[in-house]
Image 1 (cartoon, rainbow, N blue to C red):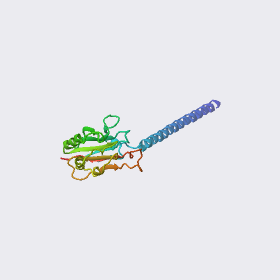
Image 2 (spheres, helix red, strand yellow):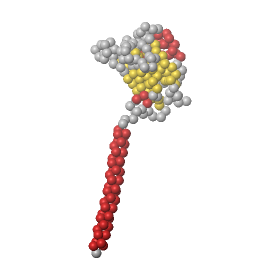
Image 3 (cartoon, helix red, strand yellow):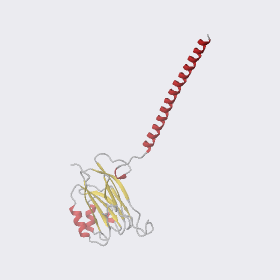
Image 4 (cartoon, rainbow, N blue to C red):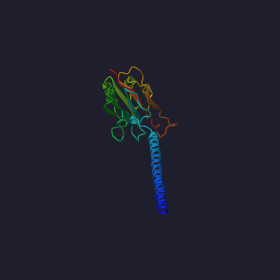
Length: 225
């Protein structure tokens, strides 16, 4: 009888230990699963809160058949202008292809491909090469312009009219050391909505002798056949 009682006790203890082990394993699995889900949700939330980046760093994505662009005028006579189209930096101080005067980038209106970049000194240079350049622009070309230091002193009426034909309205009022950025096109039928202009005014200038930088971004409609 004592032997049978001892066997029953051993069996009961074994069953208890087995039950405890199974329960503890199930609890740990559920705990690990819950922790895993918690960390997964946290990681997802962190990922979801990261703001998306759009081409050229603009504030929202462009619709189909549009080219993203962002540009800024020069800052005084220290920092050159910057022009970006479709996430490609076309002109900047880092690329060392900007200069005093009016900086110009030409882009294919169908493909968004950069065609040419130039700058024309409108303080100490000659306006004639600039006029010839403007006349040579082909229909359907996107034209982006930004001033650096002074973009107006040497501009004459002919040059202003050629730029106005690209869609500019502010070019007729551009004066000494004004800051100006513009995006238009050869063959455009209306005035461009992409233009910013700040006057050089000693009472409001951000820098000594120059106004603040002007920036602009947007989506250029692709040229259709």
